[in-house]
Length: 567
Image (cartoon, rainbow, N blue to C red):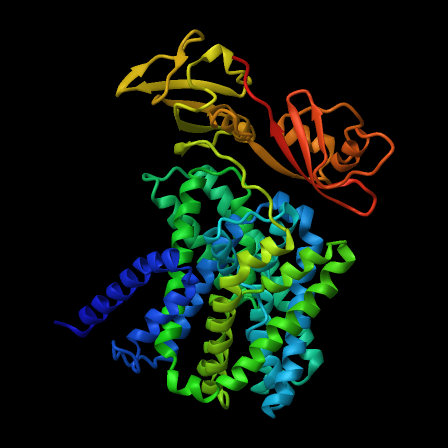
């Protein structure tokens, strides 16, 4: 057997075991990423596996690729609509917040460790960003749904602050190695990285969208390969041009993910899988590279630095960034606690080892300890803190969707299949009584393996598979039709959406000036008082439930619910 065969065998065992260990996380409440780290530690040189892995060049290459696929997936999942509404607050948190966290951790760690300030800032840069996958994995495992604005802010911040951490880390390393003469050159370096990264990311995203819309590939599975190639190309071009390849990858993902392109659902599913592969790979590699004996020697300093990061640096940065945007104190406290660390600090922790700076090994193990504490302590308690602070909302009720097929041609339509349950609203209803809009057409019904040609008088029976073609923005209304009877299909809306945007996005018309904001409009529906949380405004079959209000008494976050179908 060739050595490579044995390595592939070990890789397969580690990947399979790490994936299956997610069952342990689900059953015992252990944060999933901690499980991956423990798998790597168990397989390492001081664990039962006895694998001696110290190839930092290979680890750096794995980490770079993992970070590319993680950031690209984050961009694909970032809603441009949400980004526009929350860009100011989330963008401030993702840039100024990371800088403030870096400086606070850097100054304190420099004093505690007795090292030059630039080394403290390097450590702060490495651990300064929040990991999107870690935060939302913890939330999903607890079945939590945050207030819409808070959830969007954390999503955008955690997805977009990684490039800033990378820039600061690389800048500190360049400064340590004498490639940057002073703060002025460091500032120019950061500006160049950001500007070139943004431009290349936007340009590569537009080119990729144009190709996806015009080129017809011979197999559906090739479309995700094309987008992966675009991500890698975006990184390479930006890096060669002197910009941030990681920022370019994230922007490219945003551009692609917010356009109607062929096979978009399949593309997102593919990259979600590759992002998980990147997370697993990096946490397992972290475990393999770590030496528990060295961690034990510095656990006291590592614990102190973790406490400073979690309870001092992160809260100060969040309060400074979110207070001007009128977030209430409960949202700010939760955002402070939700600063989980993930794969990015792991990748950045390898950089000093790869660059060969002094005490890089000790720095790596400090990063390891801080990440482990963050994922374990904050990840375990995230749900408890969210509920205690009252920043959660009821989960939207969704129908039993079995298949969703996006056309491989460039059309503004989807084909969706619903399995009709006995308690569904549509069960035992005639098609012409479902109240479908002109944007929805029942194309086919499959009943007990037989085709039923849909007509107006056709009755939908429990067990039917109903295939519907529709425009994408009408999907949530169709979900309402096939949800269970007695439940309320709801849609979370920001109060800052205008009546014109509400009509364009959801097909709903409300009386009044199209430029009026929804939150202001709803306040006008109650007499002589400001809105309060829990207010319900009924307009025909529409019911608006106020989730949060601003200082003027207008609705800040709203849940739109629909009534029941007539029988």
